[in-house]
Amino acid sequence: MKRILILGAGTAGTMMANHLRRNLSQDLWEIDIVEERSEHHYQPGYLFLPFDIYTPDDITKPVREFIPKGVNLVHDHLERIEPEEQAVVMSNGDRLHYDLLIIATGTKIAPEETPGMLGPEWQKSIFDFYTFEGSLALRNKLREWEGGRLVVHVTEMPIKCPVAPLEFAFLSDSYFKNKKMRDKVEITYVTPLSGAFTKPKASTALQHLLDEKHIHIESDFAVEHIDNDSKMLVDYGGRSIPFDLLVTVPTNKGDALLERSGMGDDLNFVPTHKTTLQSKNWPNIFVLGDATDIATSKAGSVAHFEAEILTENILNYLAGEPMKEEFDGHANCFVETGEGKALLIDFNYTHEPVEGTFPLPGIGPLRLLKENRMNHMGKLAFRWIYWNMLLKGNHIPFVSAKMQEAGKAFD
Amino acid sequence: MEKTIANTLLSVNEEGYLTDFSQWNEDVGEALARETNISMTPRHWEVIRYLQREYKNEVALSIRRIGKSGVVDIKEFYQLFPIAPLKTASKIAGIPKPASCI
Image 1 (cartoon, one colour):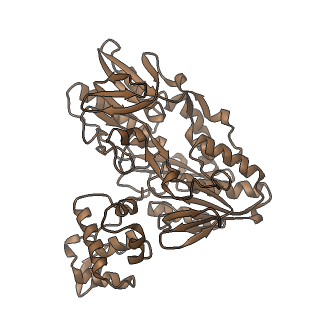
Image 2: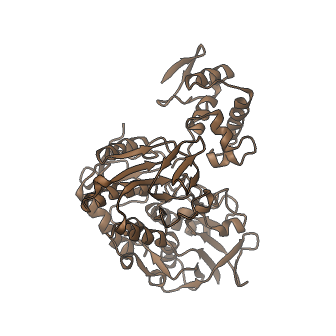
Image 3: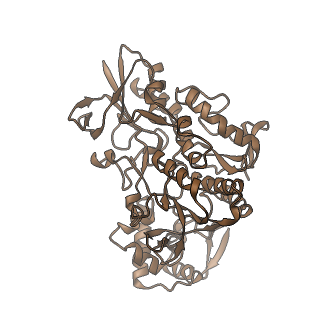
């Protein structure tokens, strides 16, 4: 019997466990998945938790619930991967041999990368919302905050879900309006990019929304340190931005496991072929989700599209056939814009987000790059889809792994 | 799009980045620098040549990597190219806008 080992039972790893168990004979292939946590979090919910839109219960379920029969869930801490030995080593010294390895260890925040971020003001006036704990602490802070300068900040790219900080700024505007204290809050969005987003057409649409909501933007800002005494973000050029409440997205790095194993780049992301998702260094190692270094968004939708394609590729690889399925960088993201509306963006390596209809060309019902209520309903409905379809590796009707060009307004 | 700089007709994109690196030479770099009010010193050129080398080696550029390059630290990089240094320096170097922004 041969063994497939999956590292990480987050969105990407769980989907792969479901896909592969369905497609491979139990007599020939053992599948093990290693995860140190016992709870699976619906990570898009971290955005809603601070505003009391979701409760912790809404976004938490046991990891085990989503691991299919016939897959062994190994609840353990990974020490290192030994790719030459085809083995992983646990922190208690246990070794697991593999024939094929799938790395799905995701990305984590690294606030320690920015001097002053973890200083005395951490979780007093400096918060993140990329962890459950951070998001919950921020909820408690917002409940009692009386206003002042709110700064929403991105430290450096790449980050998981690059639209999330913008959504945070939009939802803040709504939240303070509803609390009848918008006039007491000044909202500033600080980004290392030259504009609101990474892709030109979406950036223009999002800039328009920032203006409409009176959110001031400070672009091209590369933070050097945070001064806790004067409560200021200071950049390498000496520019400084004062805050009363800082909501920051710290540097994102791949899991420290990759650093310990000498398999990551300078941010611990794993060098990966962008179309096949095979490791660039070891043919029997595949990588998906936020753990890769490929130039697409780090997002659940990307992991979902990758999982469908990677499954085909792995089946071909195991059969000794050429891997023909090619990942195109497809990402599909709802962007909450506040006041019960959202917009939707759909793009890949070569096509930036444009206007159009989704998922049915010419019909929709969702509209691309346009703010409306239907898109917001879509975003809320997505939590159900995530728990009930996506994690279980079910295909979502009408939504293809490769991006469709029909129904979109390209120049 | 086309643009004449330093008496040379160049192809550029809508943001002013050269689309054909083979059209670049030091006079072009000098002229592009003047457009952003930077006067080139030997130190500037060292950084520009480093960026061009990395581009030829297909290494994705980021502020973080430049800080660790041993060629220049981030503080000095900002002193040399004060506003949006990586984008400005890439433009002067005749290489594409850094793709580290995903």
